[in-house]
Length: 441
Image (tube, rainbow, N blue to C red; front, side, top):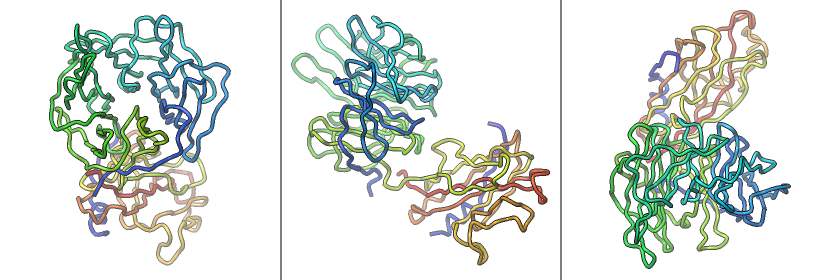
């Protein structure tokens, strides 16, 4: 990333002066069919069942979509954000048929594949470094990984792969996900069973990468009957939920090397093929043991960062964005923000806690009288900083003190940048952003 990285302490001091379960469950209307994947481009949860019924959830209600062709069976699914497609593996005569959903129609891509193995966990993990969806197949002598690139499946190298099918028993694995920060595919929970009974169920974690192949990261802690893991983009870490048919529920965060830190427990349903929503940072889940049970998990104290108000209504003004989805304002962590689209080597970040009034004037405040027509100030400045930019970009880091009283605090930020000839002042204002300080531990 280009641009100078600056640690900005003034907002951190403001945070410090401005004055438990970590996960909660919200029930929703039951989907017509099993959820397949979350379309983060269109912000829709997609479900499909064996009755050729495709349904989508828009955050309020389910609605069904008529399609001329569709898969005949439900199978493992996932979403490819690089191409904006939901992908579904269907068990078909002679092998696996691969279908894609574009929001309006299903299309089978290529012929039935007799080699690729369907992900036995019911889900496909998007591997950002490889640019495709990964199926973790448990039907051979050892785990096999297959990559979907939008056209075909290919077998990935799998040296030192964990065992799968033995001559008199088999191994199964609870769940898998891709960790983009560590560039690792993470597989959790190893079940050893035969045709009569479960022999063992261990909290073992395996990791795979292109260089080292498979590594058993470790076995630690405890495990319940069903476990599901996913990469939480707001926290920047792999999370896990355990459940069983009783009242016990548990949540964990992965710290690497097979170590899982407890995040507490909650009265939530057992997880069956959960679907992660990266847009709203929710994990949708259902319980086949309790018909009609469906909803989502989310943070009790989320750290939010969203659009607030426009700045200048002209040209292409500078803007603000998180350096990564997880570099938001969590207490005890460092918030990292990028100033982008700067037209000069300088950018100005203004931050405050009030978006209603400034020096007795209501906000937003028109800046025409200051030589900036068609521009407005949206934030009552409590602190500002001048940043050096490279290639139109600068990064600012803001440490957030580990103070529980800060949780839930709302703050506002706006970017300004010199722009010769844009107006008499030669300065433009970008849109403002609204954030909320959260707690991830």
